[in-house]
Image 1: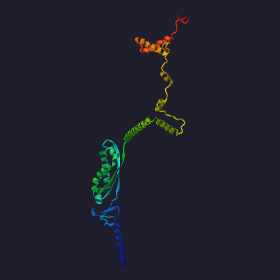
Image 2 (image 1 turned 120 degrees about the vertical axis):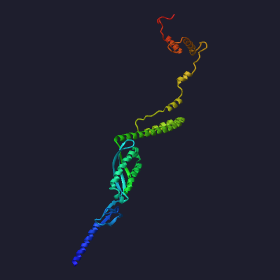
Image 3 (image 1 turned 180 degrees about the vertical axis):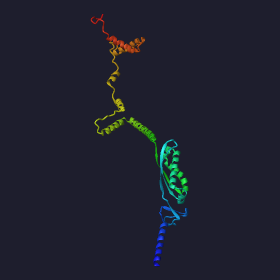
Image 4 (image 1 turned 90 degrees about the horizontal axis):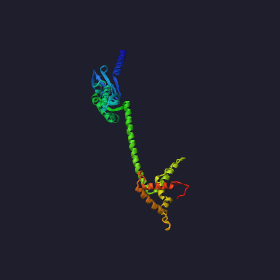
Length: 326
């Protein structure tokens, strides 16, 4: 009798252990448990920890409540300004309603992935290339709204959407590089021109100050020589300003030939008649008047013609050198 009682107790204990092994479940902290009894969803959502279900009758479905990182494969499309690009993105989402995530959609991960790809192609077709490259924040917000609208009914909340990379054709990359180079060259030329304008104003002010004091130019020249000689060069090229030459020309005395031309010719004695200067003055007007009467056709002036004839007459030798003049 005792043996039968012990056997029954042991059998009951084994049955309870087997039952508890089949009924016991553990739900992790980042999970929620959904119990289906005969295929019907129980309203109670099992919290994290130890829980028990009815074996064979109940089925426990665990749903991950963590934020899921879902990469979106690169999608190729044509932008609004007819440029072919390839764009890939990443979607961050999490489950906020475990019941809808399991009941409303077959596989919420796959559904979110397909919706993200479709929305990404739509964003590519509605945007310009410049927006894809420089205005990604607005495109990310628009893409998030497009994915989040149907995902709300699936018990899924879109946390963040980011466009990772935009791949351009090689020809478009070269064109953009040339455009950027031309723009930077234009800005460099504008900056150089502005610098030249400012430098010209400063140089004009400096020239005006130096023109008032000519010695300042010489001092500036000496400073330049000192600056060049500091490099220990074997050859020194010294610029000589034109203003310094003009200053020296004004300071130089007049030449002696000019002073001699300015002195009047001495007059001869009264008994000997007029001096050489007076004879020349008397002869030249007469010759000039004679030459003016017969104007030459070759374009020479009358004075030049008269001087030429006098020179020829003085240089012509006599016809009979051995004979004395009559």
